[in-house]
Length: 266
Length: 267
Image 1 (spheres, rainbow over the protein chains, first blue to last red):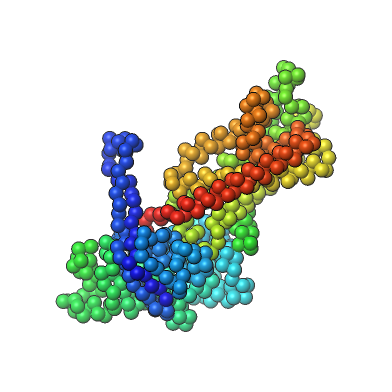
Image 2: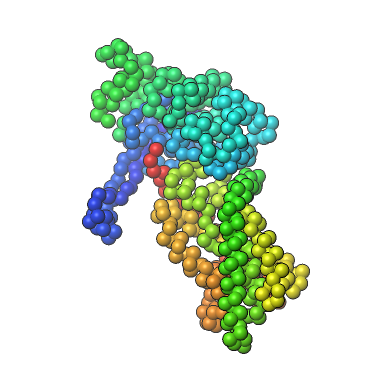
């Protein structure tokens, strides 16, 4: 179970203005401002649940995910995932979760994908048989057999992303965080990834929290969605509920969400 | 432990892929070593009594230095670590159930060893084939050779632990290019990479020999060449161990601090 209570996170960033004169001035005196990334974020996700986490760019989605993974330490508030505090028990926590950061790569750039996978196997201490079984399954479901021997640098974005997802699941984690897993994928890959996540959740009861800008991801995958804007959770409910609230019954989910962003001024 | 070995192996495979870099390195090191020895020979001819090392010692020093360059020079940076900090893929490193300091240390050592093993043999062969007095000779005895290996291993540890501090500084500066350049030049000079430490004026040499830089290539190369003998070898090795421990614990502490306030920007 994932439980966040009143999580607040601020960043101190150097204020910078454009222009040469300002840049010179910044050499000598710097002004800092505090940016509130998250304010009082609280929610719980039960075991086996699949939740979509949406919000406009810069709303705090990735920050929340990074806190739940143990990468960032919040300023205040509590977060427990199956009884572990991520940033305090970082290593023990890491063993139990899987993470895909859609904008980063975990594959080693200059060696074949299988070598990266083998390294991940050793890091997570997955035993040989179990690893082979997981790998075979992932290879089949994500259609990786052709690309496993290719160095990551030669893969297209969609191919790489499928490998990234497989890499995050080799140790069969109980909880999976997906931060924009369908970014840049073509239609076929998108469908494959969605189908795969669905199956993973149905068969293994994996808890999945995913952030995305693609409302079709949400429609295809999750019953429940949370909307975050300017660092606050604004809505927590099902997409169907939102649809009934919309004045235009024919509106697409994209339009509904855009209307919501407008309504909340985010 | 297996995870660390695996990281090591990975770096090894990675480094083996860059054949052109290895050939380039070999050519550079052969040319550089040749020039350095010719320059030393000119000094020696001018005034043998003012030459602070035996000429044959200096020749062995230079050839071993060139053969194992990537083990000992601070500036052989691990680009993956630098970019993971400045570009943010460190987010992935932090969701792994391993200690990041240990992981990076293995990665650095694996990379350096792979590069050195790939490059050393042509240089060593050439250095042994060259005629007297420009060719390299074997160390005085098997014991010295063993001590050389021990000292070389410690030296690699000191270099890796020292460079970890620079990688960690990248957490604060985002681009450690400036620090890297300064530190690399300083370390090159004080570790005897440009001119061996015996060539330094006495007072400066005495001070330099206590610094961590002297625990880098200076020790193993002087042990191999026969410039340091007897109890001085053990004193030097003890100093290497001391610096290795100090740098290791300083690095771990610094890493702990840096990770406490890590910020992964964007996306």
